[in-house]
Amino acid sequence: MKTYLWAAATICVLGSDCGLARAADRPNVLFIAIDDLNHWVGHLGRHPQTKTPNIDRLARQGVTFTNAYCTAPACNPSRASLMSGQRPSTTGCYLNGQNWRPGISEDKLLNSQFARAGYRVYGAGKIYHGAADRGGEWTDYFPGKGTTRPHPDARDSGVGGIQFYPLANTDEEMPDYSVVSYGLAKLQEKSDQPFFLAIGLVKPHMPFSVPKKWFDMFPLDSIQLPPHRADDLDDVPPAGVKMAGPNGDHAQIVASGRWKEAVQAYLATIAFCDSQVGRLLDGLESSPQRDNTIVCLWSDHGWSLGEKSHWRKFALWEEPTRTVFVWKVPGLTQPGGVCGRTVDYTSIYPTLCELTHLPLPIHLDGRSLVPLLHDPQAAWNHPAITTHGFKNHTVRTADWRYIRYANGDEELYNEQVDPLEYVNLATNPEYATRKSELARWLPTVDAADLPGTGGNRAKRKPAE
Ligand SMILES: [Ca+2]
Ligand SMILES: [Ca+2]
Image 1: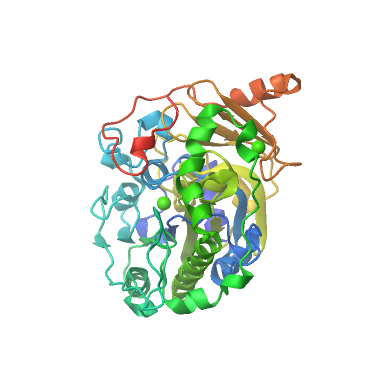
Image 2: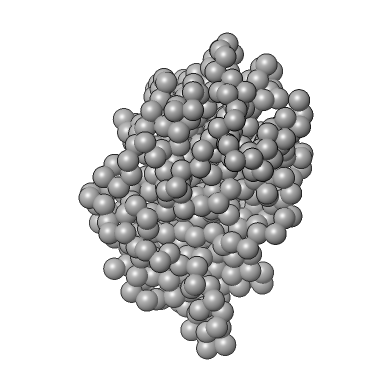
């Protein structure tokens, strides 16, 4: 049984017919989506105080990708891209306010693929952006339910647009709790058909507000701020400074004196999220499906909390683009796998197709991670590419980050010696060749914007 999945995948590679498996023979997929979780998980080591024992446990059981990146640093375009397998530059879905439907036909979506293959396709919580925007075909969908009320100790709702405050709720009253409970029930369902079960948790998305006990785990006077330099933007070109927006959220947070409170609240909200992931993993481990279920956990993009005087996502540096990305594939992944290859989320769709013997649609932009799941040290000569707004791209290799904005502004960072991306090397003529080598990876097509520019940060459109 242990070798079943990998043996079947090999047959699929060697043979001509990937439709060999009957639906009943295909593995299940537990697909865990986390909203706005940056790389502050224990096993990635970016913030020393974060507490994520359950996500770290999953990482120990399978393969964690330590250089994984979103294709777009915002909910809507990241998820539309991940679920369609196409880059924002292919579809024209770049920003939160855009409707992806005119650019992506629903039959292309990952959940539709599984439905056509005979899977039970269940979803709960946030998979696509927007509560009512489910996209594609689902056997059943649970939106989640719950109520929240501020704790009497909450001072207010935060600082400007950065919202954080403890709640008087119990965990059981949180919407994510009900979403996980739905998933736990589906894991127990008896059927001859395999399942694709997508569980979308909305925390740690703002407001950073969870029951107060989670705040109490992180005493305010102990909180460490993320690394930052006040002069960091001095060598960043105008298009980058515009994305950072230092005079917005950051100026307000600094003036308020409440930077540590915001960090405390984010850590608390991450810890709550992790506990819900733990409930789900416990449920899988005690279910009859444990050894026949692929687990894929991903966060939809990163988050800045003051690095480069920037807050939120909506930018192209390491903090807003780096994600948490973990796989466990029975019979294929070995426990404790750590893969440092640069990957982005165009990889998820083709990987799941290969692992479940689904046909590979021709519209996909990415490549399968199966070789890296099998051997995390395998050769991999592909960068991760992230796009924010029309024609603003970053290329991330193991050693470099290159950013090119639509107006031609550039940044270049040496990740080996400068992992916090303090020193922009782009104007140094010594690196001209390096820049042009990296630029060869930039998307060759930049699709026009899809309709709709409202929503998050639309008023501060990325550099033209
Ligand atoms: Ca998000
Ligand atoms: Ca700098």
